Image 1 (cartoon, helix red, strand yellow):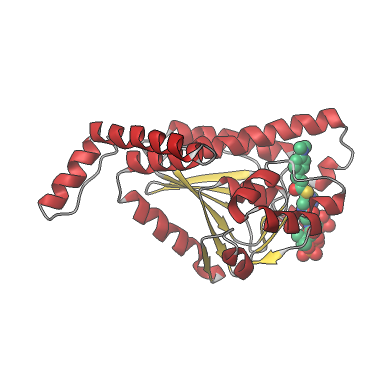
Image 2 (cartoon, protein in one colour):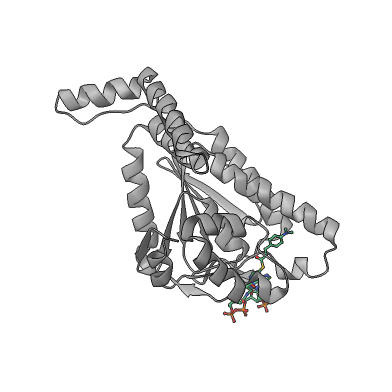
Length: 265
Ligand code: DAK
């Protein structure tokens, strides 16, 4: 097992190739203050530096009630715009690190995912939620707009109309509705959440992980390009997979009618 750093507001544990990053301030429903955002960034640096031993990253919240109930309002309420800009940079840097990981990331949404919490979940590749989870961007109820990427990532997931409805009303939606509008991929009973997440992670880990990382990269990076340019980009990465040992192993194993043993090479 990887020996990870000890943090104050988050926990990072690695088990059988799966790292779990838990936002750990349950008394404040895991609200994100600047120390927590800094630690999230540091933990993500650890995950990136340990690609050999960490194949999938899961992000979740401590306790039964909340994933993350947003940015910490008690820290924000007296901030001036310079301090707001500093906090914003911190959050953007950390959230971007999630998207830049080569490993697949899964948000295990165990409860409230509000404001910065929904923005954190939206930065992950896949969202799996408990049927008790609630999702919302309540920023306008506080007189601000989503500032950790919510206007952009939520819109890309659910479309402009739904994003505008959620952001302008500030109302929460439940897990059923979140699944219906494409905000989450799976719903489970609360007690089955981590089992479901690990099932997905284990399924991913059986595959050629260079290919998984490349597929994630091209999906994200080409999403806003014109189709012809995006297809060229895909072709370039597709060709590159033929220089990996995983491609040889995957196709040889198929022809030899056996399961492949990928080495991520
Ligand atoms: N911040 C700080 N404390 C929070 C919190 C938050 N976001 N959410 C909950 N808590 C604290 C509560 O104050 C309470 O603390 P105590 O009173 O026990 O000391 C404890 O957690 C339990 O919460 P409640 O007693 O309120 O629990 P309930 O079950 O009654 O209600 C709730 C649960 C999730 C519906 C409610 O707590 C709630 O509405 N929370 C606030 C949700 C919210 O509005 N979140 C969005 C925050 S805005 C920025 C970019 C982005 C952002 C900020 C800046 N920059 C560019 C700089 C992002 C903004 C947001 O995320």
